[in-house]
Length: 63
Ligand SMILES: [Zn+2]
Image (cartoon, rainbow, N blue to C red; front, top):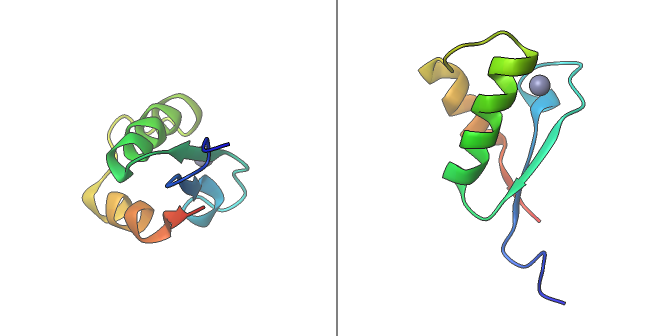
């Protein structure tokens, strides 16, 4: 099984306290895209500010 090889993970709660959403992706960009969609739908954040994007990148971990 190689499904989870080289996967990255981001917990939205690391950036937005109290949020339970978790994203998985093969690349940082993949996760940033998912986080942007989620932020727009669930956090009413139409655009992710650079400071938040930086925080997101800092909280992406390899799984
Ligand atoms: Zn969230």
